[in-house]
Length: 143
Image (cartoon, rainbow, N blue to C red; front, side, top):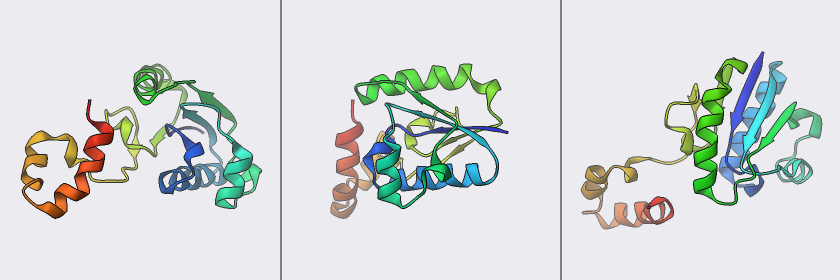
């Protein structure tokens, strides 16, 4: 069976990347042939050291680096590839929020996505605590 794991930048070595690598290891353990779609080349040796995996536990059978220099270029390239390659995979898993557009069978979302909905954002911005919580997400993802 074939699986596609989508994560924009596994090299970041944060919590989201730990989830991505754990899902990758689980898929490989279950016998899937895994392809990783990311924004650039993954430094597997560094990832192994950061998350304490052996290379054979996480090294995918195939890696597709989109060589996207910025996040917008990655989002533009990731969607069409996922649609075109759909028939090649038994399961597509996104471990990053950006594939919430419905291309993945399973999406792991790391934080509440309500900040993207203006009417929801306005409700929470009346509270200083929620304003403090959502403002960084809004700054990062606002266009």
